Every structure is written in structure tokens, then in C-alpha cells.
Image 1 (cartoon, one colour):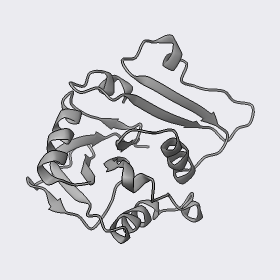
Image 2: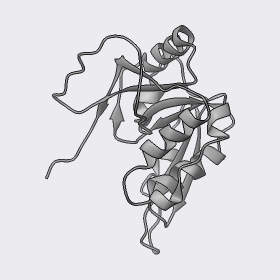
Image 3: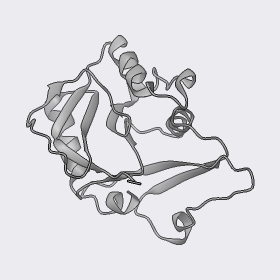
Image 4: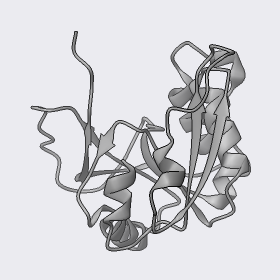
Length: 176
């Protein structure tokens, strides 16, 4: 995912990585963060606590940008994804945009923006005014439902989630 970000036509200013390993005697597996050169700042925290809610909340606290991307580390995307996201935000005047998050072989048949009843925290961009008012609920840690809950918080704050099916990410998955 970092290589995909590094090749963007519009580069991110900062990427926040919360690396998790619950084993107390372990250290980072991401040495390349400091041994390679990156065209953006990287804030990296290695923690001995697992869970998406905690990691996302910790990452949000390290952001200051007007727009915050919620991208998982198993995404792949074209080098113009940030440019296309920027155009989509301007054309929809949205404060929340969810991208199509497809696994290999999946096909998205939608071609236009729509108000969306869901929210995906691995494939979205959210405006600062929303991330300052919403948090991932730690009561949902290690379960499912944190995305649904975050989406409900967004809607209760008076915002719509807009789905952009034409902007697609590949969601890599491990098959056993």
C-alpha cells in the first residue's frame, strides 16, 4: 500500500501506521519505513494491543489534515486514485466518500455516486469536522460492527455517506 501511495499523482502529506502485535517480546516488522525513502511523512507506532477500533482512534489523534483517509494495509490501487477522489469530493460536495472495495474477481456494476446506507473504514475519506466528532467505539473491539457504528455516528451528526462505485480499490485477501 505504501508503494501505491508513493506513486500517486497527488501524494498524501502524511501516512499514519499503527502496527499491532500482542506478543510482548516482539518488535516492528516494518524496518523499511526508515531504511527506504518515502515522498511523504510516516508516523509509525508499534503497539502490543490488537484491534481495529483502538488502532484507528490512535491514528486519528495523529492527524491534522482537512481530509483523513481510512485505508487498510491490504489495499491496492491505481496511481491516480487520490486525484480521482479529489475530483469526486468536489463534484459531490460530500464530507464522506466510500470507495468500491472489491476482491479479486468481483465486479462493481454501479457507475454513479449514490447516498450509501453503509460505511467502510478500510476504503474511505472523511472530512476533519467529522473525525473530530466521531470515534470508533471500543465496546465493538474484536467483533464486528465498528464500521456500521461509525457510519451511524456520521449520519447522526447530519452528514451523508456517498459511495463512489467507479473509484475502485483491490482488497487483497489471504485464502487458506
